Length: 201
Image (cartoon, rainbow, N blue to C red):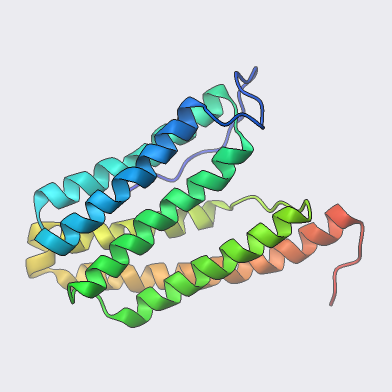
């Protein structure tokens, strides 16, 4: 329910990296605030077009805040808030679908564990001044997670072709595990380069 974004930097950024109140950050905060509405709609109403439309609209703001960030300048706050917004929407939506009995808990637990582990690792690395950029495959991972949720709340598919949502969820699990391992592997090399050390074998 989202679109992987292309990378790009503005020629003359409007905002510096330390800015907090920017158009992109406001959109991201709005996405975080709106996610509980979508989650409650899944729990209360299940698969309905209104539920799907709400989730789709929230997910599409990821494209909007990415465009705004590239246009006006990326910020450290945005780098923190944007993945947080994705995790609130994805993990909340998946948990709601487990609650409704539409998804098994096992794949959702795997996804949640990976997201929390990598977030904690990224936070710890960030405090040491180590930054590892997100890869395009990681963006596709989030894209697949969102569409697993989308297929599960789209009325015709949820009723008659629910296996499509389940298959998409397991593809998301595979991408989640792979990108997590690739991130940790890349982080070791980046840390060694940024800290001027030799990577451990």
